[in-house]
Length: 541
Image (cartoon, rainbow, N blue to C red; front, side, top):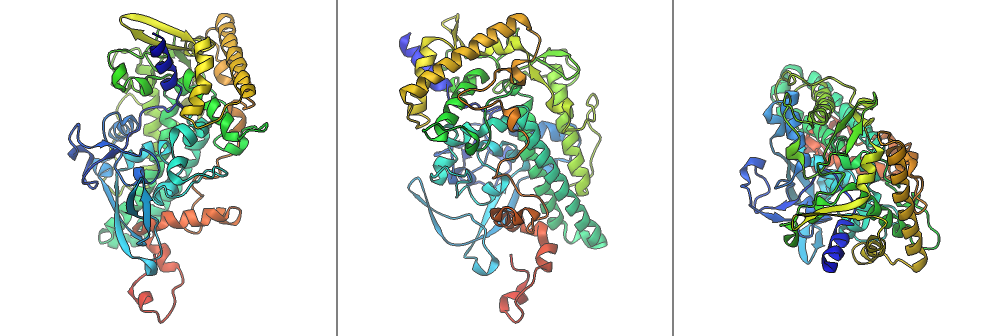
């Protein structure tokens, strides 16, 4: 039993993600998603950094992609908009060492410097998983070959590792920060879509000849919306309907002598304990006979969310997507399903219509869905109840038919989590910080019990009543600013962000080079060196 408890706390204490994202290695990465048989391929290894940018994000438990495809169907977008996009990207011949393998860099370069043409194959729906693998769309476009996290000082693979670096700064996957990030990407998607429509209108009757250019532009707009949908979908995973502590920037975490990442990792571990652990534990062989029914994500009679109007409904989270019912059913989770799809469909339809419907005409949305402002409170105002947060303040699993619950303030948890920080998060935890962590966790659990008793149906805890933890404030207090690594404002490649952030110009140029067919007009407007043989061949990309 001691070994079981040790394993459970060690494994579940990894940082929390929402609906599952997967990366699979396939021999042929250019196929349609449906052409990959169930069970084909293998999990990406390493599952972080440059390797994940070179493989497909299609496979078992790709819940974010599945939600996108369900949304596309309900939104009335044609199936062609979900076809595999194959971008011919001009790159150098620079070698890149990835886990002992010699690969060619995916970084796009000017046409005059091109040594190779490499194909980047994906569907927009796959990019709904992007924030679990990449810091931004430009990060994916450049092959995950740099570390976008300021001050991290590590190589690209480690920088993209969820346990050590991405998880500690994923507070933007939790409410209310998730709403801020979705609004940014929805605005980018709409802006790009309008540029696509302008190109379509300019081409006029000649548009048929240049359909591939228009579809590439539209695919980019949908890709930006898909990145945004990750945050929108997360907002409707029950485990994310509360204010996790911290910021998407390491520099915002306090430091009292130790590295800021030390505290960020411990904050992420505590957040993972409250979020729910099935996604980490259930897939492991030694756990296949156990049911890791850990609240908040697993079905639980006391777990509910509250809407801005005060209505309460039960909900589930990651690894339980199959329990979300079809519209019109009598399931208790229908309100969660209807709200998620209404928000997602509203955002997707808005972008597709703005782009000019280049993959085919937009059909009617499924009956039973509402048209909402996808950035508004009806899509990001839901919060977990105090009683739900009390249930979350424990590790729950069924062991040989018996339900087991370990309070987060137990000695086992208080001792093991700092150990996980050292072993998995690669963080040294001195005694002073370890004691601070234990006391902070005890205060949190005591507060959940108190608030659940006094106001069980209130949302005080989810709205930040927890206060600071290890010096990190609830994420709502960081909601005003975006992270330094987000995708720059349009237009690309001449982004207005370049004046204030020099790297923004490089990132915008990389995006324009990867989706270069959608920027044909921009390349034609760029000055060319007269008399150069290359300048007579066409625009310099």
